[in-house]
Image: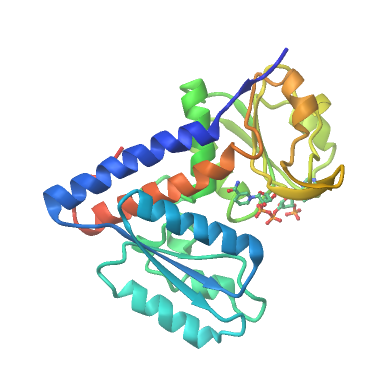
Length: 292
Ligand code: NDP
């Protein structure tokens, strides 16, 4: 059996197209241009790449992009002041503080200082609580992108067994909440899970968000299962730098029914969902109907 490839790159392009259409309508009919502000503290190379890519795609969809680059030794007070300024700026509908922050900054404090209505990453404690109680919230972009691909592939997820490997606040936990919201039976696995291979073998849907290159081999996957690989790991192979996921694509794609590749799977969907969340935040802020 050879798995169907879930093409996140192509799907993300359709999401961006819709976003571009909404942005054009907001401008034409309401005279509003959605704006996304991204704050980057320090010079983490991976974060710089993400921030550049976010800024570029924001502009390509017709939105305003605001970038705040701050030194690695920025004080908490200075960063809080920038967030406060953006909270009060009516031109800014979405605020994203790029994580991870340098160690001297309290991430929880900073994230919770963002106006929840502008928290397009969905990490503010209010949004986490709203998601956990099934209320309207800003939904974290990576799990949202995974859910969209799963819904697109399966239609209904109701009654399916889903195993999420990883329990981080930014991927694993919100992913589990979203799958529960779609009536999956959800297991959250982590580094202390006993007999992980057996747990994963029980899954109709496997979401791997671990951060360990190719950790999940094909013989952990139930035949025909759907595999969503969130991992982005840089490795060196045959003298070349390579990006690989948390799933061993080669063996897993021989047993899975469908699988996301790395790159070209979850990654592009994450940024597309960030853009979609910014439009949603803009519509909510202006009392306008939200895009579906
Ligand atoms: P974290 O490091 O915050 O969390 C990793 C999770 O994996 C933890 O819950 C940890 O368990 C669990 N884990 C670690 N080792 C094992 C193991 N041997 N067996 C089972 N579980 C294990 O990572 P993130 O959630 O932030 O990211 C996960 C991956 O997703 C990374 O590769 C990251 O680069 C990628 N990522 C990709 C994005 C995208 O846009 N595609 C966006 C965000 C992340 P415990 O809690 O017990 O320590």
